[in-house]
Image (cartoon, rainbow, N blue to C red):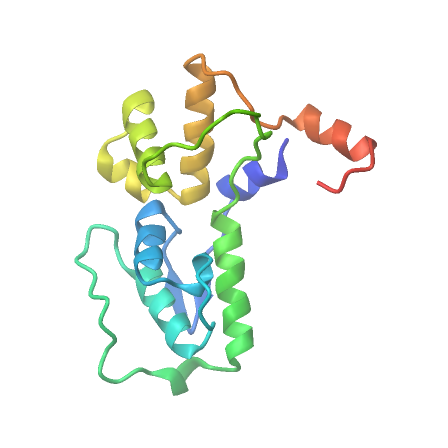
Length: 176
């Protein structure tokens, strides 16, 4: 079985800065994107401010009104062993939940025009009969795997890399 599939479905509780994080979902990712967090690929420093904001986002209930503004008093002194230690813990959290399926690149294929989180939510709602709330709050790796499987089950030509494909690539000497 694909290790990324297992990683997406078998998760553990994550604690960063002494706080338990909720399962990383599309709603959390959207808010991290809105904050231009370095933890979702933005070119900004992974400093204490970015880490504290990321933890606040990922602790929030997806159905809550989240305030992006920093608190007046940031409790940085309470939980820091070291910034790098907690940064590694947060990156481990993201990797644990965000383990998307691999796809072969198809020549001539084009990406959807919709932002990718909306595209995934829309597929889950249309083909999987998920409610909007369920789609936005499903752990992110699971949402991506369900989206891919629903497309395949609906007759879309799959470019999904299978377990057999992975085995063949490893036997051919590729690092996958």
